[in-house]
Each structure stands twice: as structure tokens, then as C-alpha cells.
Image (cartoon, rainbow, N blue to C red; front, side, top):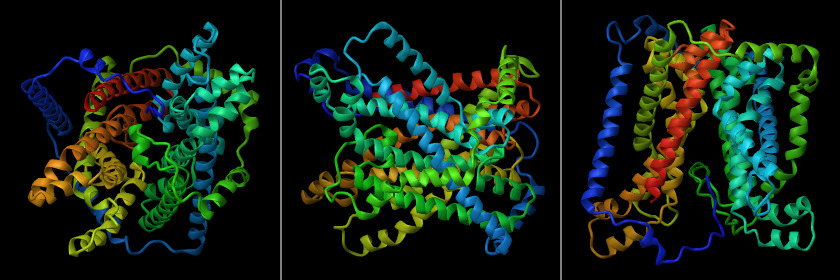
Length: 569
């Protein structure tokens, strides 16, 4: 995601010389070709997901699903269990806070190294080589899901809380480094160059001339990243680390549905409080939404009302909160340098290389890879349907709108936002377990689980983009006598569709990585194969699975970039 605040405008006469004129017929043919390609991909995914023979619905699990639904209004309120839930909630919050803090430290250091503005125009070749190597390492680190990092770290460090902190800090730090580097490049570099020309050293010059200009955006992204870390902390429960995630996994395994509903309620309450607080802070420090960060369209505009009292207190309490979180979970950094850790880490590295094919050879690995792609495609179909149905009602109503239609929209706003919050707050592992109660293991339960989870996130992103859309063209058409429906379709339809496609492509890249989550609990794809090989300590095969997953992620990311660039063009 790139933030350009001081890019000089291009000469108006240069644009036509660099771009060939494209006829309307060619544009139509391109769009039809794109639609046919998407339709063919969907048809292939559906064909691969449906079993060639055998039943699709698990009738034996429907009774368990009925029991789960019947206990929704009867959660477990036992005093001892409520104490466990409260402790697990605080642990989840603490781990997310520590993981975010670690990611931001890595992100700031990596962002300064990767930033072009922070360096001279022609840095020495060791610096250029080091930056290139760092970019490659960060790409590899963030391409591995945090759950996979947790499973690796558990095999070396055991069930130490430090596992959850590192599993969040490593991939999130690699992502933050990319974002911070591009954000710093968007800050005007003239003050920094002036200080450097006056003889100031590099790091003091960066602190005085570069960081203050980027501070609002960096703070905004930090709180957005904290929201993401909270959801990922719950997912890490599959690996045995992370408060509410562990309790949810144990309650689901024991089929204690009353406890499951109590934990889900605690998770929803925690997610709602954190999102409301994060939205408030982000709106104060910089006018940036989650949709802006996801699409790389952040703006460094300050809020006109300034920092509220609650935001000032929040920023002041960040460091004490991190210290309190460290005291609460009690991670053991000494374990990183212990003889046992070094021995187990060395054995793990030796076991990971050279890679080996799973049982069944290359056909088995290729089949799991195709299942992964099909699962991600179908998950995005479910997510887009949820977004189209719920998203239009989840956008914040305009304050200047009056009348019965406006009141009806306001009445539907809270239920729509609440539904999206529920969908994205419940981890996909839980959705996968519920889907596996009604469907046999395969692509469909994994796609259903990821689709529900991704629908909550995609719906929020699209709703945030839609609620900030400029409605003056629509009002102008209405003022000219154009019917309401026609004016809405002509003025709002194209930008709305562009937002939907942009965020769908962005989430599809992440959805491919997230298939490992549902695969670890019994769905199909590379995730299921990875969980089986990790349980058998067959690490050489794990390496092959990870390489296949990285190849798919890189291919999807490159394709997504080209498509988004074409849309922007």
C-alpha cells in the first residue's frame, strides 16, 4: 500500500504520449473476457468442491448442530467458569497487546531501513544489498500464517506465552515494515535533506524531520493492527496458546455448548469494545479507516476537532498497559537463548531440510494446492454475497438525511453492524467446526467457514468505503430531473463496484493464507495436509507444503496487484 503526499503532478502533455488510445469495443471485449474468466474459475471451484460420489450433508452431525443452537439462550454462567472466562479474556487482550507492540518495533525498524526517503539518493552498495535482502526476508516471513509460526514455535519453546507474542510479532512486523516504509516515503523529504545538508546525523535528523510528519498515520495503523492481532490471538488457540482461543477449542472438543456460547459472548464483547475504542483513536489522530489501510489509500489529514480526552488518556496509558500485559502473561525471554531451545531449534532446522513430498507424491501435493485455491474462491463468493446483502445497510447513515427512509436506514444500521461484528469476531476455526457438524470434511466446510469470517471483514471494509462516498453527483442528477433509481445507478454504481472489486481482490490474497486455519481443524487443502504432517513430526514434508503455499500466495498476490492496477488505471 503506497501513500504519496508530495508526489509532483505529471505534465499534462506527457500522459497521452505514454498511453495508447483504447477503443470502446476493446474495453468491452476485455471486460467480457474478464467476466468469462471469473465465471470459468467459479465453475471449476464448484465442480472441485462437490464430491464426485457419496453424501454431502453429514446427517449424524445435524443432531449436534441442533444441540448447539438449542443452548444459545442457555450459556454457562457457573461462577468458576465465568472466572476462567474473565482470566482468558484478559490473557487474550494482553497477548494481542504484546504481539502488536513487538510487531510495531519490528515494523518501525524495518520501515526506516526500507524507506527511500530515509536514505541518501545513492546509498553505498552494502546498504542496497542489505535492503534487498531484508525485503526478501520480510516477504517470506509475512507469507507464513501466524498459526504456522505458532505451531513451529511450540515445538521449540513449548506452551510458553512467548510463543503467541512471537507468532504475532513476526508476520505482523513484516507487514508493518512494508506499510511504515511506504508511509515514510509519502512524507515530504525536504526538511530531512536540509538537516542532513546542515551536518545533522542520520538518526537525529529522522527523529526531528521525518517521524513527526508520519506520526498520525503510524499511530492510526498501529491501532488498526491491534484489532487484527486480537482476532489472530484467538485463532492461535488451535496451537494451545492464547486465552479465549484455548478455552474455545477445549469446549468445542468436549461439546460443552453452554461454555461455547459463554466464550463467544465474551469474545464478541471484547471485540466490540476494542473496535469502538480503536475507531475513536484513529478518527482523532488521523482521518483513516480500516478500509483506507486495506486499500493503501490512507490520507494524512488531521482531525479538525483535535485529540479528545479519551484519546489522550489512551496514548498515555499505552506503555503502562504493555508493562501490565507483560506482568500478566509472564513470558520467558530467557528461553530463547537456553541450551534446550538451541538444541530443539537446530534439530527443527535440520528436519525441515531437504524438503520431501507427502505420501502420494506430487499428485497429492498438487491436489491439495488446487483444493486450497478452490476453497479460497468459494469463500470469497460467500463473502461477496454477505457484503452485497448486509454492506449497504452497514454504512453509517448521513447526518443530513431526513424522512421515513432515513429513519428506516438508521434502524437497520445497528443490526447490520452487529451481524458483521459477529461474523468477523468468531474465529474461522470455530466456524469450521460448526460447518463440519453439518458437512463432511472437504472443500465446502472450509469455504463456508472462511466465507462467513471474511464476509464480516469485507462487509466492514466496503461499508466504510461506501459511507464516505461523494453523493454530490447523484444529487446533481436528481436536481436535473433524473429519476432517483437512474441517478443512483449512474453516479453511485461505478465507484461502488470499484470499491467492492478492490477489497475483494485484497481479501482474496489474505483468504488464500487463511485456508491453513480451517485446514488445521479438518477441512481440505494444504492446511489439512500441514496439520497432519505437523502432528506426525514429518517436518521435511512440511517444508514442501509451505513452499507450495508460498508459491500460491505469491501468484495470487501478483495477480491481485495487476488487477488492482488495471482498475486504478
